[in-house]
Image 1 (cartoon, rainbow, N blue to C red):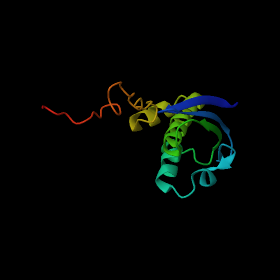
Image 2: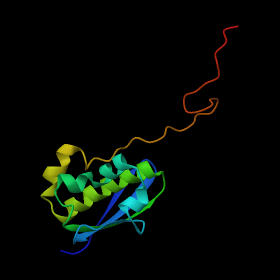
Image 3: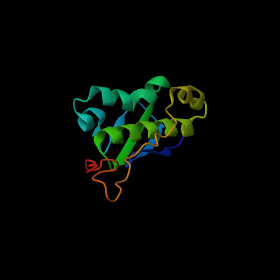
Length: 129
């Protein structure tokens, strides 16, 4: 099969994912997963979760380009992008990934600051007199 493209998003992060049949190589921003995330084992596990659930760790090559946000939200965007790419690659993966919640975009983002307040909800102390 040919290359498949998918986009993953989380907060302000975007992950552009290209997936093709191969030998299990995962490249993020031109680096391996270990070089990109360093010692964050729990976040690495989150990134590879869709591949483990679909049992595709050694049968697809993935190239990812990320932008925006921090490394944690970028990792979640990569996870979302890989999940969507797997479904585009083979529709049968949908029934495997959907129950784990890997195809749902996490729509939570930072609440905007309101005028007259210090942050989104923080106010100055109320004084009755």
